[in-house]
Image (cartoon, rainbow, N blue to C red; front, top):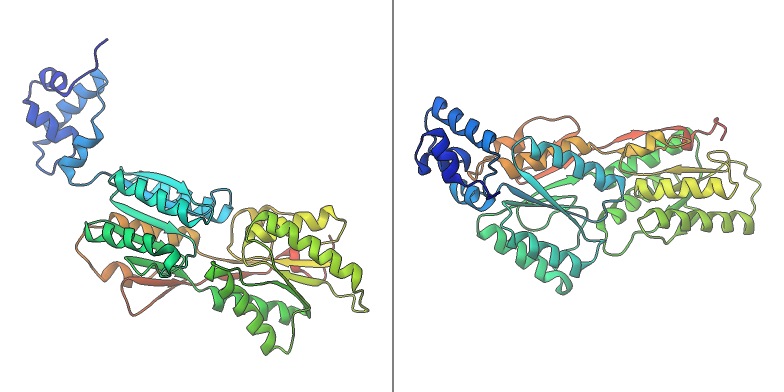
Length: 362
């Protein structure tokens, strides 16, 4: 059976080819509602699917949004990607998703591919370190994309291009450490700042600063990746530390992992190794992913407003090209507006759960 053409729809509806095109390809020059409904009914009856390239020409937009994340297996990125996908889809646009595994070369290839597919906007999720020689190509790509009319949104850290949504990493981690100290925790293990991931360094830095103010020095510093496997490695290091340096202090050693996926990996591995959580080792994370509330024990964390972060990103990529400070100045829960309409800082909430409870049993 031959493919259904636009001319077939126009003939069936009794309208001109130009009118059928304007209705089905999203042109701003649409005919009356009755004519549009007749064309749409004919298209549905015949099974006609509009050509995406024709739609892009009619609308001057492709309807495609490029979404770049570090690791879709990480529930932090998966939660944000799902929120963005749902909200963009409701606007009749589509998301093209790619992950980079924090590899610069992979990210460059992904951005080039998305730009070649004429996406209207790029949303880059996660902490980046742009500006040096190794990733100058990324900055050049983003700057060129914006000059050509594309929208750039960074979710995690300023890209030096476009608009940015920045979690209050250091301040929230500081608040978490203070809350744990107030609860009675005195022994801490922290994950060192990870090279190339500024958010992790900010979180650990804020956490340690609060401990210092409370007169507490971390008992153990651990180098591990910001992944579930990194959490497994942290758990192994903690077991080695406890076995080699027994203490008369029977309070648990509290691990701070600067990402929930790492904290969840550590929590599971500690239990597999026979260590009681939170009896012997307490665990705290950062991010507020839904998996933390389903873990056993439930995970203490800083819950970032992931839904609001995704909503703001989508608002920016879908708004009309005319710049307006109004969207950045609107009030939203858990949000601090900076002086610039192009950067928004979002706060997180400290959630003290079972994984750090001093009186709970594993």
